Length: 219
Image (cartoon, rainbow, N blue to C red; front, top):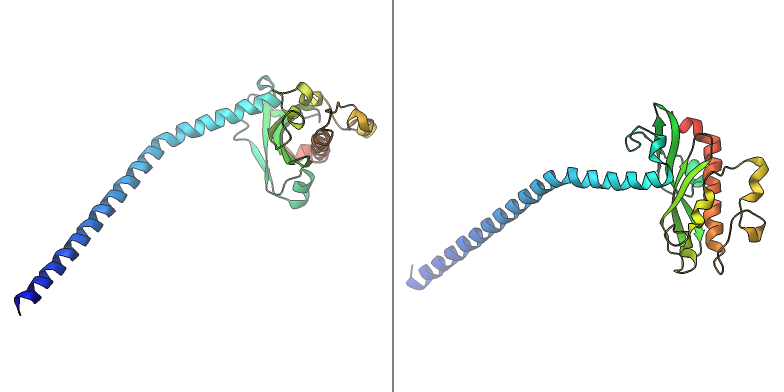
Protein backbone atom coordinates (compact mmCIF):
# COMPACT_ATOMS: atom_id res chain seq x y z
CA UNK A 1 0.00 0.00 0.00
CA UNK A 2 1.48 3.33 -1.05
CA UNK A 3 1.65 6.37 1.13
CA UNK A 4 -1.10 8.15 -0.86
CA UNK A 5 -3.62 5.35 -0.29
CA UNK A 6 -2.71 5.10 3.38
CA UNK A 7 -3.12 8.85 3.78
CA UNK A 8 -6.53 8.73 2.12
CA UNK A 9 -7.68 5.95 4.46
CA UNK A 10 -6.45 7.93 7.43
CA UNK A 11 -8.38 10.99 6.25
CA UNK A 12 -11.57 8.94 5.71
CA UNK A 13 -11.23 7.35 9.13
CA UNK A 14 -10.73 10.75 10.74
CA UNK A 15 -13.74 12.13 8.86
CA UNK A 16 -15.96 9.24 9.94
CA UNK A 17 -14.75 9.56 13.52
CA UNK A 18 -15.47 13.29 13.40
CA UNK A 19 -18.96 12.71 11.98
CA UNK A 20 -19.82 10.14 14.66
CA UNK A 21 -18.43 12.47 17.30
CA UNK A 22 -20.56 15.36 16.05
CA UNK A 23 -23.66 13.12 15.83
CA UNK A 24 -23.06 11.90 19.38
CA UNK A 25 -22.72 15.44 20.71
CA UNK A 26 -25.85 16.55 18.82
CA UNK A 27 -27.85 13.57 20.10
CA UNK A 28 -26.64 14.25 23.64
CA UNK A 29 -27.63 17.92 23.31
CA UNK A 30 -31.11 16.99 22.03
CA UNK A 31 -31.57 14.43 24.80
CA UNK A 32 -30.56 16.92 27.50
CA UNK A 33 -32.85 19.57 25.98
CA UNK A 34 -35.79 17.17 25.97
CA UNK A 35 -35.12 16.20 29.56
CA UNK A 36 -34.97 19.86 30.59
CA UNK A 37 -38.22 20.63 28.76
CA UNK A 38 -39.99 17.67 30.37
CA UNK A 39 -38.69 18.68 33.79
CA UNK A 40 -39.90 22.26 33.35
CA UNK A 41 -43.26 21.02 32.08
CA UNK A 42 -43.57 18.62 35.01
CA UNK A 43 -43.15 21.41 37.55
CA UNK A 44 -45.06 24.16 35.71
CA UNK A 45 -47.98 22.15 34.30
CA UNK A 46 -49.93 22.05 37.60
CA UNK A 47 -49.44 25.79 38.02
CA UNK A 48 -50.62 26.50 34.47
CA UNK A 49 -53.61 24.19 34.88
CA UNK A 50 -54.53 25.86 38.16
CA UNK A 51 -54.34 29.31 36.55
CA UNK A 52 -56.44 28.18 33.58
CA UNK A 53 -59.04 26.65 35.87
CA UNK A 54 -59.19 29.80 37.96
CA UNK A 55 -59.70 31.91 34.84
CA UNK A 56 -62.48 29.57 33.75
CA UNK A 57 -64.12 29.74 37.17
CA UNK A 58 -63.92 33.52 37.15
CA UNK A 59 -65.74 33.51 33.82
CA UNK A 60 -68.31 31.06 35.21
CA UNK A 61 -68.96 33.39 38.12
CA UNK A 62 -69.94 36.12 35.67
CA UNK A 63 -72.89 34.07 34.45
CA UNK A 64 -73.71 32.20 37.66
CA UNK A 65 -72.96 33.97 40.98
CA UNK A 66 -70.59 31.96 43.16
CA UNK A 67 -72.88 32.22 46.19
CA UNK A 68 -75.43 30.05 44.38
CA UNK A 69 -73.26 26.92 44.46
CA UNK A 70 -70.66 25.22 46.66
CA UNK A 71 -69.37 22.39 44.48
CA UNK A 72 -66.64 22.45 41.82
CA UNK A 73 -68.39 22.65 38.42
CA UNK A 74 -65.09 21.93 36.68
CA UNK A 75 -65.25 18.36 37.98
CA UNK A 76 -69.03 17.96 37.78
CA UNK A 77 -69.72 17.87 34.06
CA UNK A 78 -71.78 16.20 31.39
CA UNK A 79 -70.77 16.10 27.74
CA UNK A 80 -73.34 16.14 24.94
CA UNK A 81 -72.28 14.35 21.77
CA UNK A 82 -75.63 13.59 20.10
CA UNK A 83 -75.57 15.41 16.71
CA UNK A 84 -79.27 16.31 16.87
CA UNK A 85 -78.91 17.81 20.35
CA UNK A 86 -75.74 19.63 19.34
CA UNK A 87 -77.50 21.18 16.36
CA UNK A 88 -79.99 22.77 18.75
CA UNK A 89 -77.08 24.50 20.44
CA UNK A 90 -75.50 25.57 17.16
CA UNK A 91 -72.52 23.32 17.85
CA UNK A 92 -70.64 20.93 15.58
CA UNK A 93 -68.41 19.46 18.30
CA UNK A 94 -69.30 18.06 21.75
CA UNK A 95 -70.56 20.57 24.32
CA UNK A 96 -69.67 20.26 28.00
CA UNK A 97 -72.26 21.25 30.59
CA UNK A 98 -70.73 22.36 33.86
CA UNK A 99 -73.14 21.53 36.66
CA UNK A 100 -73.38 23.78 39.71
CA UNK A 101 -74.89 22.40 42.90
CA UNK A 102 -75.73 23.81 46.31
CA UNK A 103 -75.49 21.18 49.05
CA UNK A 104 -75.70 18.53 46.32
CA UNK A 105 -78.90 20.01 44.87
CA UNK A 106 -79.04 21.43 41.30
CA UNK A 107 -78.13 25.11 41.29
CA UNK A 108 -77.44 25.86 37.64
CA UNK A 109 -75.87 24.84 34.34
CA UNK A 110 -73.05 26.64 32.57
CA UNK A 111 -72.32 25.92 28.91
CA UNK A 112 -71.45 27.47 25.56
CA UNK A 113 -73.64 27.97 22.53
CA UNK A 114 -72.88 29.34 19.10
CA UNK A 115 -74.88 31.88 17.14
CA UNK A 116 -73.90 30.95 13.57
CA UNK A 117 -75.67 33.88 11.94
CA UNK A 118 -73.80 36.89 13.25
CA UNK A 119 -73.07 39.72 10.83
CA UNK A 120 -69.42 38.65 10.55
CA UNK A 121 -69.68 34.95 11.43
CA UNK A 122 -70.04 32.81 14.52
CA UNK A 123 -70.65 34.34 17.94
CA UNK A 124 -69.70 32.11 20.87
CA UNK A 125 -71.64 32.65 24.10
CA UNK A 126 -71.29 31.40 27.65
CA UNK A 127 -74.66 30.95 29.33
CA UNK A 128 -75.71 30.25 32.90
CA UNK A 129 -79.20 28.82 33.44
CA UNK A 130 -80.92 28.23 36.77
CA UNK A 131 -82.79 24.98 37.50
CA UNK A 132 -86.14 26.70 36.83
CA UNK A 133 -85.03 27.64 33.30
CA UNK A 134 -84.26 31.30 33.92
CA UNK A 135 -81.09 32.90 32.61
CA UNK A 136 -78.60 33.75 35.33
CA UNK A 137 -76.19 35.39 32.93
CA UNK A 138 -74.82 35.55 29.38
CA UNK A 139 -71.37 36.63 28.21
CA UNK A 140 -69.77 36.76 24.78
CA UNK A 141 -66.62 34.66 24.57
CA UNK A 142 -65.69 35.19 20.92
CA UNK A 143 -66.98 37.13 17.93
CA UNK A 144 -65.90 39.06 14.82
CA UNK A 145 -68.63 41.68 14.78
CA UNK A 146 -67.96 45.22 13.58
CA UNK A 147 -66.17 47.43 16.14
CA UNK A 148 -68.40 50.28 17.30
CA UNK A 149 -71.54 48.52 16.11
CA UNK A 150 -71.89 44.78 16.64
CA UNK A 151 -69.31 44.64 19.41
CA UNK A 152 -71.88 46.21 21.75
CA UNK A 153 -72.73 42.64 22.69
CA UNK A 154 -69.60 42.80 24.89
CA UNK A 155 -70.40 43.87 28.45
CA UNK A 156 -67.41 46.21 28.59
CA UNK A 157 -68.80 48.07 25.58
CA UNK A 158 -72.51 48.11 26.43
CA UNK A 159 -74.80 46.66 29.15
CA UNK A 160 -77.15 45.21 26.52
CA UNK A 161 -76.16 41.58 27.29
CA UNK A 162 -77.64 42.01 30.79
CA UNK A 163 -81.14 42.19 29.29
CA UNK A 164 -81.18 38.37 29.33
CA UNK A 165 -80.85 38.10 33.11
CA UNK A 166 -83.89 36.49 34.74
CA UNK A 167 -85.63 35.67 31.45
CA UNK A 168 -87.01 32.31 30.42
CA UNK A 169 -88.82 30.88 27.42
CA UNK A 170 -92.49 29.92 27.71
CA UNK A 171 -95.31 29.43 25.25
CA UNK A 172 -96.83 32.76 26.27
CA UNK A 173 -93.67 34.85 25.83
CA UNK A 174 -92.27 33.41 22.62
CA UNK A 175 -92.91 36.59 20.66
CA UNK A 176 -90.97 38.63 23.22
CA UNK A 177 -87.74 36.96 22.17
CA UNK A 178 -86.92 39.42 19.41
CA UNK A 179 -85.59 42.93 19.01
CA UNK A 180 -88.11 45.74 19.41
CA UNK A 181 -87.92 46.40 15.68
CA UNK A 182 -89.41 42.91 15.21
CA UNK A 183 -92.02 43.32 17.95
CA UNK A 184 -89.94 41.87 20.80
CA UNK A 185 -88.57 43.10 24.13
CA UNK A 186 -84.89 43.53 23.33
CA UNK A 187 -83.15 46.70 22.24
CA UNK A 188 -81.39 46.71 18.90
CA UNK A 189 -78.19 48.48 17.93
CA UNK A 190 -78.35 51.34 15.47
CA UNK A 191 -76.91 50.02 12.23
CA UNK A 192 -76.31 46.52 13.58
CA UNK A 193 -79.63 44.74 14.07
CA UNK A 194 -78.31 41.43 12.71
CA UNK A 195 -75.95 40.96 15.66
CA UNK A 196 -78.52 41.20 18.49
CA UNK A 197 -80.93 39.06 16.48
CA UNK A 198 -78.30 36.34 16.27
CA UNK A 199 -77.53 36.44 20.00
CA UNK A 200 -81.21 36.50 20.99
CA UNK A 201 -81.89 33.50 18.76
CA UNK A 202 -78.98 31.53 20.19
CA UNK A 203 -79.96 32.21 23.80
CA UNK A 204 -83.59 31.37 23.08
CA UNK A 205 -82.60 28.06 21.46
CA UNK A 206 -80.41 27.27 24.46
CA UNK A 207 -83.29 27.88 26.88
CA UNK A 208 -85.64 25.76 24.79
CA UNK A 209 -83.02 23.02 24.91
CA UNK A 210 -82.84 23.31 28.70
CA UNK A 211 -86.64 23.21 28.93
CA UNK A 212 -86.56 19.87 27.11
CA UNK A 213 -83.46 18.26 28.63
CA UNK A 214 -82.66 20.24 31.80
CA UNK A 215 -83.45 17.53 34.36
CA UNK A 216 -81.42 14.87 32.56
CA UNK A 217 -78.40 17.14 32.38
CA UNK A 218 -78.05 17.02 36.16
CA UNK A 219 -78.11 13.20 36.25
